[in-house]
Image (cartoon, rainbow, N blue to C red):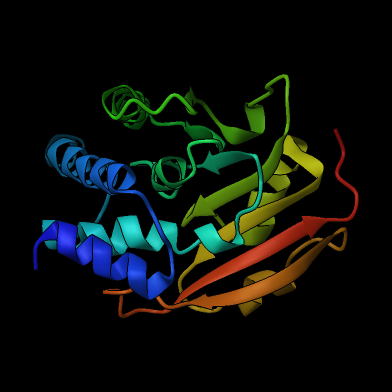
Length: 211
């Protein structure tokens, strides 16, 4: 199946409507990711055929649960889920954060080539990041244990904000280790077209975020 058809069918299965322009940008991003991946090992997907399912659709599965105006993507790596979400929601202000300089260079180049004016890139460690603003949502995909994610990034979350943590199997043990001043608002099992393994999204809110 051609990538364009795979993407279109996958979006239908997820119940997500995107413009033809957005779909074209998503495919251009996939091509860019595959090109850079050959040199920089940005991601661990074994073959190009899985890029649509394991990167584009997997990232976009978060979209129905994202109502924020600003998003920090921690440990963005090759740009997931931040870049697909930024393409799908042009009004969403997205900062992609990664401590790896080569990955950050790719993220900057992708934002330029895809003309994503709503994306900024920061190269550095999340616990040392001190922007002049905070975020309505913080997302992470395979970045760290949930408690560690909260500990390292809580200074960056708005008082009424949420963490959207993407996980594989249901992370009950990680949830049990969360600090007492945060709460799991929802745990969603995601059905991602073309992905056979379990996928979960954990929505976490803070009862008292320090700034």
